[in-house]
Image: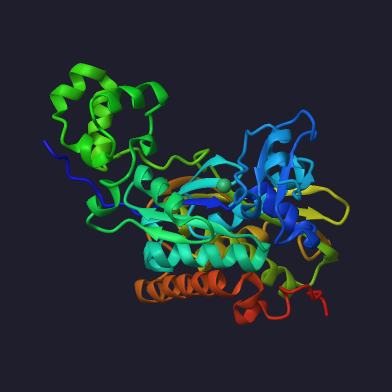
Amino acid sequence: MEKQRVIRDILHLDLDAFYASVEQLDYPELRGLPVIVGGHPGRGVVCACSYEARRFGVHSAMPMFRALRLCPGAKVRPVRISRYKQISRQVFNVFGRYTDLVEPLSVDEAFLDVTGSRRLFGSARQIAETIRHDIRTDLGLTISAGIAHNKFLAKLASERAKPDGFFEVPDNIDEFLLPLELKCLWGVGPVMLEELRGLGLCTVGDLRKMPLADLKWRFGKAGIQLHRLAHGEDSRPVEPDSVVKSISHEETFDKDIRDRDTIHAALLDLAERVAARLRRTGLSAKTLTLKVRYADFTTVSRSRTFGSGFQQVKQIHRVAMELLQKTEAGAKPVRLLGINLHALNKGLGSQGMLFDEDHDKRSMQLDQTLDLLRARYGEKGICRATLMGWRGGESPQD
Ligand SMILES: [Mg+2]
């Protein structure tokens, strides 16, 4: 009966007291103080509150007047959704450095499937710690991480981790799962909770002892679900918002460029960026389109399609350079360059297409090493020799 399943590594990441933390970030005088984010003190409800306020018993969805009675010294801040969304985008950008399998649950919470990222970035636990470190140092916020082999357990684990921690569900899941209260289980609302209590069931361990047939008889389909969850089973995949159709990157230059070396270096930079995204998604591309906008704003594009997929920086750069020959770049000053990869497929494609195999392998290893270093030290910290002086804000013409 048991289907053979790939063991996946799932992270559930959840920012701590997100709205309140952003207020404390933007207004340093609020740090260490009880902060309530919400509507009008007389009428509104609490949208979020800092951990300092939670100590007084304040929680979200509570009427403001009650919250302020519990914690009269609280600093009240209005909700600033656009600011939270702005920071949320930066947080999701950090997630995207480590995997493209990101399923957002809200502005401050997501599931990440990092199964395919282990080779580049280490174990699930290391990836969780790296992401937590990135968000702390890049954005000044704390995020908690739950680590498990499925979404259900990962979400339970992040709750255990809060605030500012991580928790990895042990291989023997029972020591973690069985003592939990039934209200922790997905799909168990107040009504079902009452019914389960009526049967004398309080913990997941109690539920585990109920035969499947009994649960089915009492709760129908929901009973089957309960049985699965009581065994820590959840086969739902992490589902990213959208399937990637194409990968592109373009750069508008501060000053128009016409020097060939500079144009080649700029193409290498673009090739690196799109190749890094290809590798993270585990995709290869069959079609490359080069976009060139001249100083007079006219734009041309040139495409080439191959019989099999490609993935490496060198391959992408070489094709882009070939296509460049079919434009007037250089003869005319260039304002913008872009590389778009489409006809994407899962897998590495045919690596031997453009290069001999040995060279190919070394080239792939170099790409991966650069990925690793960039994830560790940031975009600007590391680049190929050809790009020295090109990234980091210096004008390529100098
Ligand atoms: Mg949160």
